[in-house]
Image (tube, rainbow, N blue to C red; front, side, top):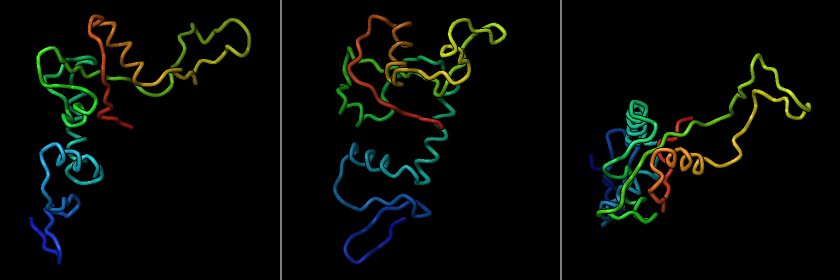
Length: 149
C-alpha cells in the first residue's frame, strides 16, 4: 500500500505499522530498517515464526547463511569459502544446584540451591557449548538473535 504525504511517499504494510520512507536504499539498508522497527506487525510475525523454527532444531546446528546478513557483514562475515555460521541455543535464567535431597555440605554461604546465577555472559556460554562440539573452529563474530523472554 502506498500513502502520499506532502513531501515524500511512504511504503507501508496493510495496517501502517511498518512504513519505510521512499529513499534510495539497497537491500542491506532495507533489512536494517526493518529490524529497527521491532514492534511492527511484519517483525513480530517473523520473530514468532523464527523462534518456533529454532526450537525444532538442535541446540547447536550449522546454518547455510546468516539470519541477518547485513549485521553479520558488519561483524566480519563474508559469503565465501572458509566462513561458516552456527546457531547455538543458550538457556537463560538461574540454575538449580544438583544436591541430593537438597543436602549441601559446608558453610551457610554455600548452602544456596535455587538462585544460582551464571557468572559469565550469554556469548561465553554459547562459545563454551559450541567448543564442546566443534573445537577446531575459531570465532570472530557473535550475533544475538531470537531472544525469547
